[in-house]
Length: 322
Image (tube, rainbow, N blue to C red; front, side):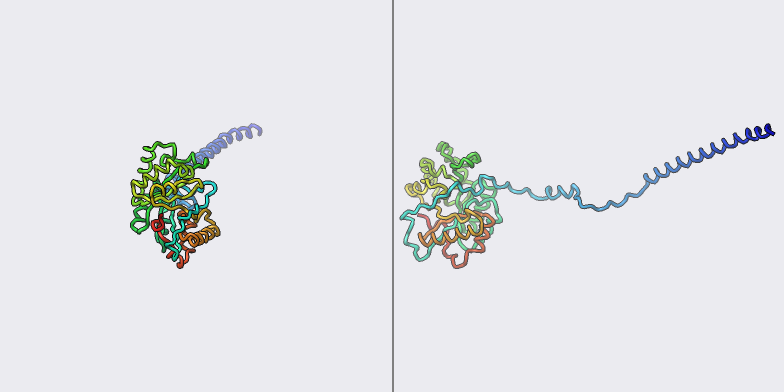
């Protein structure tokens, strides 16, 4: 009986091994086939739609840079409105009080630092009263501004950069600033080059210049150049020790000097105070020379706060030269 059972068991062992082998082979075939199927799906799958997101593409980023024209050079810090320490009050000379215009107190408004912001400049040209513009020679739009002013019948001046005594700004002065260490030939050449950049200029005034306008030798050279080119001179009065106006008068050059800075501060209250001071100055002296700059706040003030009753008092600087 035991022999029969052992024989039966021996016969069934190879049979079980056969089924296990078949099962293993079937599993292997299934696994390989499934892998090949997944690879096929990946190779032949249609591309999926990309989900939109908020980040711009590199094309969106660089397109405006490529397509837009280059912007003009930004205003150099040396050309920014600079008041050199404490500004002196204008000199009250007896000859500064003519009696010829007692019936109409006059204000001559000069806009300095022109040649950078052309949008502001166009608004200034559209003001309903006379102005004079003084243009920086190395400003990016110096020539264009001079041509536009001339076409509008607005007197043009050269706003000549000159040496300052303020150590904060002396290191920023470029080669186109006139300074007292120059030889007369270099001084002359710098001036001639600057004048050539501002067509139609009929006069000049100083940009900064608290050191140079106090130097008699330099002012003598400057007035000789004004005489040569038939230019008048306006002293911006950035120092109480300026000899520029006296030198111009002695040389027989038509001249005047600054009385009021409209925008020493661009705060609304300060602008209004300066304007009231200009009215008082004109009433007191009959003539007031007022300097301003093409700041956004200044332009808006001139547009919105100068009443029509004062329009007739404004006159170009040529009308108040001495």
